[in-house]
Structure formats: C-alpha cells, structure tokens
Image (cartoon, rainbow over all chains, first blue to last red; front, side, top):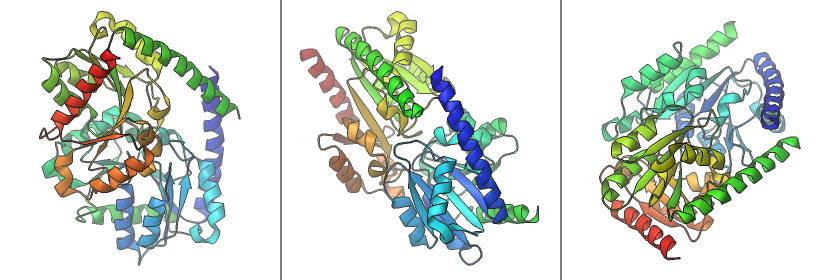
Length: 222
Length: 222
C-alpha cells in the first residue's frame, strides 16, 4: 500500500536526521531526554520543579512540541531556562528535522547544555516511532488517567527507559492501583525504571533528579 | 509532497465511507456520538454511568477504539450493552471503514439502536479529522489535565458540538480554572454546549442524559 511506503520513507528520513543529532549531542556532552505522555500528565510542571532544584548545578534547556500556543516554552523560560516552542502544524509528534531546525535557529542558547529536555506533543501514540536523537525516552502517566494505560498503549511503555507516575498526591482521590501499573510496565519492559512523584508536593523529586544526574555522569564517563 | 497527497486520498476515502454510514444511521433512526479525549479522561466511565441511568429507556450499544486490549468493550458489556472492540493496529484514530466493518461483523446486535456510542482511541489530535458518520463529536477534558487544553488542541474543541468537563469531584485537589476553559471553548466554538460532571459522584449526569435524549428526539422528529 502506498500509505505504508510513505510512512516507511518518512521514518527512514527521520532516522537519518536523528542519528546526526545524536552525534551532535555526544560531541556537546549533553544528556537529552524525550518526554512523552498524554496531554495534561504534567510534563511541563515536572520540568518546572526540576529546574527549580537543579538550576545551580546544571545548565539546562528545553524544546516544547505542541499543536498551538507558546505556553509551555513560556513556562520554562519563566522557570529560568532557555526554551523554544516547536509548533507542529497539526502533526501529532515532533520529528528529528524539527528538532534540528529549532536548535539551529536558537544558536548559542541551546548549545553546550548539560541537559536538554524535549517535551513532545501530548500524545501516547504518535511520538513513539520518532527518534529525536535523545539518550532515552521517558513516559509520564498521571494517577488521574487510570491504571490500565500501559497495556492499552504498549509501544511507548515498552520503549521508554523510565516510567514516571505523576500526581501521586491525587492517589487518595482516584482509583489507581500503583502495583498493577508497575506489573504491566515490568511485563512490557523488564529493565524499565519506575518512579512515583508529585511535582506539587515534592514527593519523589529527589529520586528523579538523582536519576538525571546519574545518567549525565554515565554519559560523560563512557 | 507525496505525504500530503496520500493523506488527502485517505481522508477522501474516509469521507465516502462516513457518508454511507450516516445514511445507514439515519435509516435506523440511531443517534451516533463520537467521543474523543486524551487517554484517561473518563470516556468509558462516563458511558458506564450513562448506561446505568438510561438502560430502561433506551437501546444502546458501543464501539471502542484502542491500540490494544479488549478492556473498554468488556467494561461496556459488563455494564449491560452490546459492544465491540476495534483494535486499530497502532493507528491513533478510528476510521469510517473500521466502523462499518465492525457493524457488519456484529450484525443484529448493533442494529436498530437508539444510541450508538463510538469511543475513539485516546488522543486529542488524530481522531479530529476522521468523520465516522456520527451525528456529532463530543470532546471530554478531565479537570486533572489542566485548564490550558482547548487553546493547545484547538481543532477538536472547535469541531465538537459538546465539551464535557469530567472528574469535577477532583476540583478541590487540582489547579483547574473552569471559567478559563469555558472562555477558551466559547472563543473557538461559540455554539458549543459545555457540561460539567462527575461520573463518580453523579453530579451533572442528569444534564448529560437529558442532552442525549433531547438530541435523539430532535433527530427523530426532523
């Protein structure tokens, strides 16, 4: 089918662009994480809280994918780091060429960082297939979204090195079985790290920041 | 670009299939609603609560789109209505041909209903462009997802005749400005109905059921 041929070509072109980005990030010794979740799982809120904790220690920046509005990049800039919004023109995911173009246009501001956060378009499906040259993918799942999601969206939970359960402060008010989610994630992806946190209360933020710092150290020593 | 040509062809084929479905639904005097939201906004939970209230009055059925698992159709069957799961094989939306094939395969069970619920794949972006022959689209937004979503995902909030704010029982525990959301929806779609409800507590369920019954009566008297 021509639809499938076109998809294969698009993915092959993306893969080439992602490989070039990965080289660049290696040369710059920047750890790059690709954050993927449903709309409203708390990606930007987690990044705001992360910046507040790591601002004195690490040089950070952000790329924010969205269909419309500059809102997420604005929030990161207010939090104190350089950030650029990428509007996808209706597409349900970022691709590597958009990331490359954004980095070229931002120039110095996003060069030579310790940590680059790529906040993907809010979507548990489409971003899964597009490599952005990142070191690893992180999937966020909020406790308000229900505990059946890993098995319903298996591709992203299989691929993400880290699953972050967000909004654990809501646990007393929702039906969400943390153990059931952990079991689904472990079945799909036995090596995955699973963190539980609330950016609002600060619970779990130490482990999250330690994970990022540890991965950066690993990348730089390898 | 070939990508765009293929997309246009796919949408044109979908439109033809949707038009045929719409004829069928008109002949059968069935009201068909296409429910669209992020993963975990509460589509299935809303339908369970709806079936519990309208079971004695209306003949209902469901089609459930997902990437994987039979879970949602199972929940609707347990709630007491015929339902069929449509697994999209990775696609981020249902299309009209999948709906047609599912109806043919289910045969009598989903024929001659008063009300057919089509629960789309959890996604605020992709399902927007695919007409399924429905009478209208309904977008759900949970209060845990943040109050910036209509402007970030303008296409679906512009197209949906009804916006349902779900999980209003969580309002005391989250930052969510209902008035701000209403203003965004009204800006994008001045004619939209906006309902606030909690399927968990039952708040707002009367208005929701009255809306469905009213739309069914309107369809049958026209």
